[in-house]
Length: 209
Image (cartoon, rainbow, N blue to C red; front, side):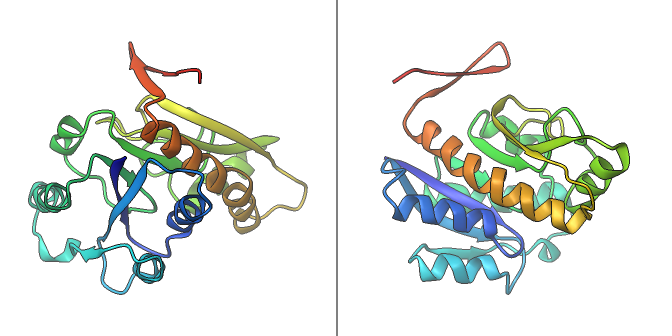
């Protein structure tokens, strides 16, 4: 069983998907050891408490620089013994040191089919606004390992969802979360906890059962 820490900043809907999968017995090798928030009062903390997961707050505003904040997050992760980290709506890009220490150990979910609509400036509703503006007929979500390149790490899983006539960014965001993010993030985490994921030459290989 691997110790998994989840970093959050807001509501925690993706955290809830991970909790639900764990409680349903779908990820027996996952020990949710900590939920760490960058903000006080994040609803994600309440979700964690209801699931009896230890919670911590490492407030971004308490640290002057990105490097200082990164060091504080790393210290907390070491304190809780985290072996895998999930970014679930964590709104800060940490320094390269974080990626070096936890290479191919940090999962992130992005609300598009990378390499479309990703990188600097593409987060939240901005991603779905861009998809609608471009006129794509399919969008979706991607779970990938975090690297120094924003949204540029090895891809673990992807799932698509249709873009429909009359969609707004908010409607599309909800569809992508429900049909893609909440499905592939818990599954990608399960594969990692089960030792089924290997990175070879910068690409993910899923080992067969």
